[in-house]
Figure 1 (cartoon, rainbow, N blue to C red):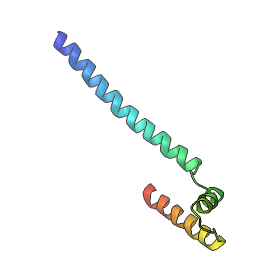
Figure 2 (cartoon, rainbow, N blue to C red; figure 1 turned 90 degrees about the horizontal axis):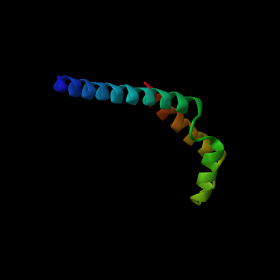
Figure 3 (spheres, rainbow, N blue to C red; figure 1 turned 90 degrees about the vertical axis):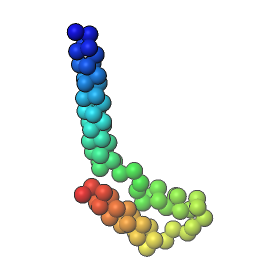
Length: 75
């Protein structure tokens, strides 16, 4: 009887952990899709801090690369 209770608790904990993981994963995917982590202004600031002069061409190139990488990761 006690063995069944322990087994039920262990199975319940495992199911809860798996469900929580996938729920949190779906939430974070949606959050980052709605709120992209880096925009052009942030990229410009980072480049200036690294000692690079951010040209419009270079910024557009980097933003396009990031968007392509994001599309590939969503597939």
